Length: 312
View (cartoon, rainbow, N blue to C red):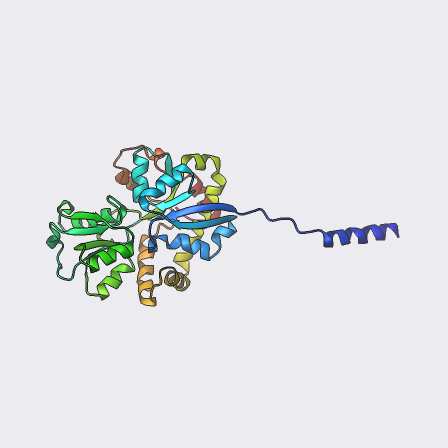
């Protein structure tokens, strides 16, 4: 009888005992420079719960590309997706490293006024860019070179986010704009000319990645790997789930089905499925100004790849 009572009492205690507390999700602050398709994988990871699966509570914050790297270095942000401005900061000595590349190829288009129908007509004209020497400016210059035009003959004007660049073209503040989808289609429908795009950019020209302060990377490697696992899951989802990805893109950027389908095709071409680009491509981007070991570290990324069965 005593044994039966003990068993019953033990069972009652098990039933009444509160469930074990879940580990609190790690708070992460992530910056992006503009609402564009290059941020889609990071937004998708939130929508599909991939961050949550990895024990992360991620806040996406839009930050001027010139400020993202400084905020990461100061600890105000944990990661930034901004690539061009951050890389320049790293090459100038900021203690930051890239731990992944998300969009490896520029998705920018060169869009001009209605009366400018040839790239050579841009001589002496103004082009809207997000920030001087940013990725969108570099992409526009690559497009111009591919068509035999010297980009030094054009005056870049820092205007800001993509919608502002589109509006600068509409109002005549500039003669051309370097802009990403879906704005290229919108402007084309309005009668503006698209003189070139991603197909004219021969080499890797990333528009988004994952950059982290060296200090955070050293102190919180597991958190960094959790974030990279979530991103790789998002990349895989994009490639394997076209209809739902298009739906997410429609909501994220208020795109029509037609525009979102166009944006999706660009995403498939531009996305770095494994989160990497080659050392040759890194050397081209850095122009040999720093050893690659001081610019990027794919150690944790490759661990995440192996754990998720992602091929390099």
